[in-house]
Length: 175
Image 1: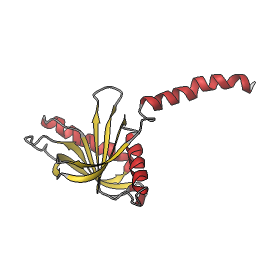
Image 2 (image 1 turned 45 degrees about the horizontal axis):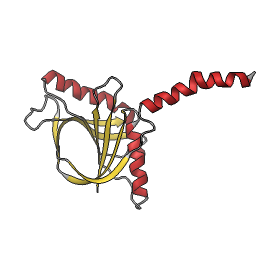
Image 3 (image 1 turned 120 degrees about the horizontal axis):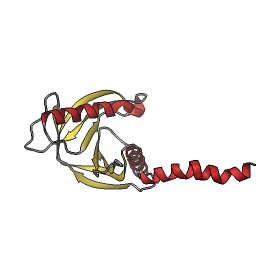
Image 4 (image 1 turned 60 degrees about the horizontal axis):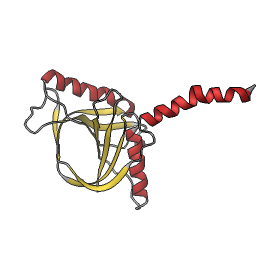
């Protein structure tokens, strides 16, 4: 009986899960390079809390951009503390890049990151998968050189504008 049900189980459950993982970019490789990055101007909200709740604060920042009628650029997060060291809690600056001539929306702070040498990990994937893939690839590349990830890191996410929320995620860490 079990032998006859196995193909149906694979077709009904396993194959769709693998297909979704593939569609979200789960099998895409991460490019890790040494590069120059910045400068960035951004508007942000401070965040201190569970890593799992950063999306709410990111959305609150976007709402302020929309109310002010200011165009929000790429999602930009400056991760100031290591969530592995504090049981999943993180201190961060969460916001969006901002054109040089644009005004900072009310209730947001202005931040700037100057041009600097970085380790860069870049992957095209869904926002739900991209950060873990990029951090793991960067950690592996640094470990091969006897180094580890050091905070702060800068995360940039540029969606493709499609409904599937696939975009380019870039992780930067100062060299």
